[in-house]
Length: 246
Ligand SMILES: *[C@@H]1O[C@H](CO)[C@@H](O)[C@H](O)[C@H]1NC(C)=O
Ligand SMILES: *[C@@H]1O[C@H](CO)[C@@H](O)[C@H](O)[C@H]1NC(C)=O
Image (cartoon, rainbow, N blue to C red):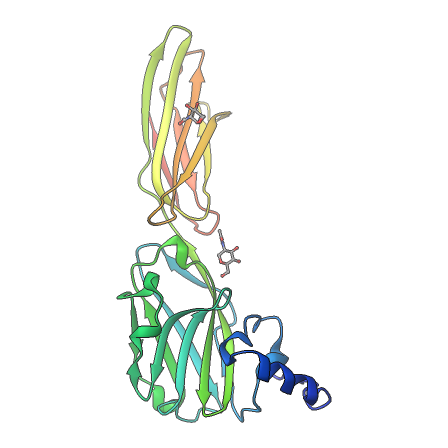
């Protein structure tokens, strides 16, 4: 990460900002403004280049690394949601600082202590929900110097096996396909026994506790051709799809 900043030219302005803001608020935009990274640290913090795919219900590791790879054992290590700034996991002098952690991550994070002496630090988040999707910042601070980087987490949810329920009506047959646990919003596709797509009405609703989407999709078959009817649901992030046929 070779970033050149005009910090020296604007030193008076930077000093002013430092006086007015608490340190933690300086890097609210750390992914857009590399020059806002404060003191001239003689290290950089590097994270994964691409977003990390995390399955809902599973776990995800946020790994950040010093360059050059000096020890991070005596540094303050902080993983936080960048915007708004919310502490996910904080570590000082080799100890977790639980008081700073926001409630939504309480009891769900583990610091992986393996390679801290080599400048590598990882926080594992357990029981991933849709609310964990987004941008994280990790900051390594050594006295007044700090460096930080951004880690993107992309949550994917593969929902339950869909179910089709068929209801006879005077004017035809109504079929409804349901499934839950999707993220982001899934696509639903109905096909008849000839393999032809059939238009349907699809409702999506997000779970208040997990943020995952439930799907209820229905169509009416005027020709009552239920046999061979299939409903497929897929996530834009995952190769597999869930399919059920009558
Ligand atoms: C999930 O987070 C990524 C960044 O990690 C973002 O690009 C994406 O829009 C988010 N998805 C949803 C559905 O919010
Ligand atoms: C979708 O929502 C509409 C309006 O809320 C409702 O009338 C309809 O029955 C719902 N359809 C399904 C398949 O749940």
